[in-house]
Length: 604
Image (cartoon, rainbow, N blue to C red; front, side, top):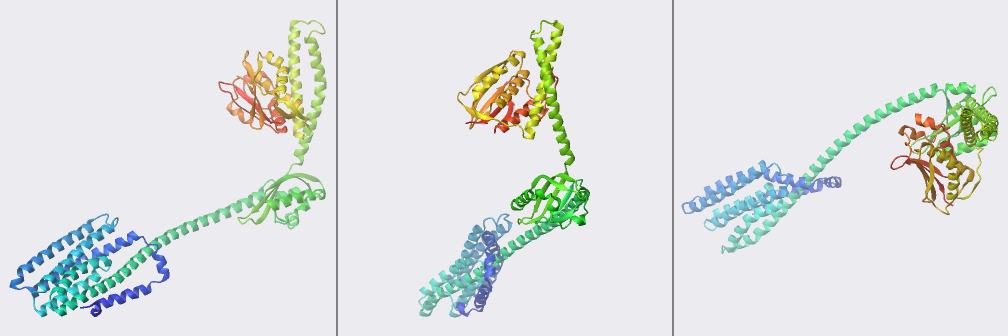
């Protein structure tokens, strides 16, 4: 019986072809998302799920065959065959039971598939054995029945093992091989011709099983792929829902921030104006109306240059064009005319508002009237400068007179009077130092302090400073020592101001060093700079004071510090002088106790 004569096989063929045609290119691309191991596990599960059908079919067909071949002379052979049937069936049931009970069967589906192939081969070989044994010993009618029975068992294996064509090939080979051998060796010409056709029918059935397996395989892959797509879509939907919630929250925050910003701008004590990219005013707060004397309606739509004195338009245009080009904030003082004709000096900050695409949305201007503050600073500086000059002249004369008395030039004085004049001279000198420091700070901050840089040998300047401050150190029982030198190293600096820096550092180190100790000075190369370090063995710098040690009037708040005296301006002056000479200054703890103050100047 051929495959072409079997309606069941023809239906399987048409189904396979139809399913293959129905697979679109989109479905093919979706199948690529399927996990091959999961697809194989599903195919194995399908095969094991149909094992009970194969077992029941074996018993049913076996019973019919037994009824047909139950003769006295063949009963022992039939019973032996049934023994094989029961043995193979028991093994198949055990395999099915083990598969159902296995908790990790999906981890290695290939092994379960191989065991099923062995069971299928054994089952097919059992039917092939029946055909080989019973065919020669029966009549023509029984032989036809047996051939029809074996052909049905072979073709019936297609739907049972459709999920794996190799297993069907093993099963059908077990049936066909022995039966083909018997037909070929029977000695009948007709049977010999049929023996030649049987392998052809076998190949056709295997081909059909292969096509059906491909359809099953494609279906499983599509199912898994769509399952993964469904999971991905679920995750994507959840993510979109979260993003929508976050966007809604962000929208509310933006609206709240906008209301807060609007409220802040309207109630801010400083003038706030919003302008477009051309400089036209679009929004004005109440403080700006009060500052300039114009209403918001009068300012809206006008160019900001309306609030700038005409002689400063060119400078303002330069800053505005730079802001537009760089999108960077601009700040500075601008002279603004009020409506009543009075000029104001305002400190303005212009901040560009730029979207993520780089487009300038608006410019926010914040202005603060500093006219009174600038005037107060000017008056304060004039007062300080005038007072300092007026105090320095008579104070210098007083100190000179006291020095004449203390040196005995005007004659000997009583011990008590000498002590009082010494105290007066010391405090007068301290007051003069304070005045000089105040004048130096005022000159530095006003930009009036000029330097006269020249090439200086750093070691010579250090030795000169040590010599000039030797008497000051002896007053505190401290000596100065140069422990590391750099002969020939030169820097470009102002000699007078560099000596002033060294004097401040040496005097500070002497005041805070233990009596009888030494202040060590070192010179060393530091890259392209020359570093000068002054090291003492004093109590060190309190942690709370370190951040403001170079600030004006900065002194550590301790009794010992106050007793040493000082203006609190020395280190601030040192920092500004060193920076004006393109150097840097700092301090660090000295190993073993004390402090090291250092400064670096570029090497020349």
